[in-house]
Image (tube, rainbow over all chains, first blue to last red; front, side):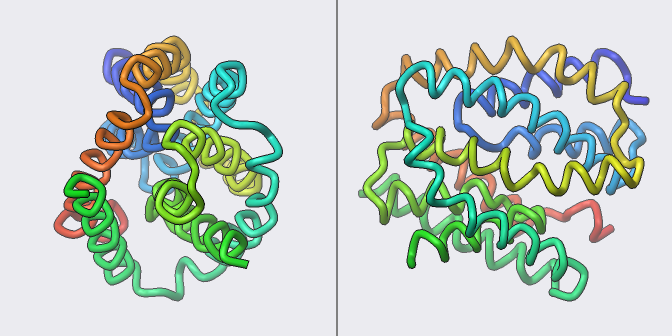
Length: 117
Length: 119
């Protein structure tokens, strides 16, 4: 099991990111859980449980603060669920390293485009 | 149609551990005219729906370490409030810049770092 201090610290960092950016909690939690001795699969699954719980609270804050409405999100759910199922099925058959690199380039390009606009 | 495709690719990228949440937020702010806070809110709900299936499957497989998760959640829940309040204080424009910096770091990590399953 993950050491108490490390768990509390990574949970807090994941919580701040989740509330602040509405994403990214898992990025902190997965490596921390792996360092704590969990296998890759256990770390991902445990981080997913953590971020799901955090996201429930974040959604309530965002809805309560009038930042978005349920109607705005509803149209994206069918495509997202279908995509998630497809991604889970294709996960082992696609070149993971190449996909990560391509995603990295995509992210950097969009980040620079936003910062330099 | 473009909304559906963006959601599809975000869901697929998320399921493959590639940062699907960032794809949807980028699409919503850059192409669909959403403000940064609204895009983040939509993404949170989107993530919850997409992760429900994965969570069910992982739970059945016994991969979730609930004791570790509980400790993280204990510290994470009040921290969500802090993060949310900081985002409100920052305002939409600076929040968007902050997200871009976060994205830049994430992109560099994706490009040059190694995932756990690549070791």
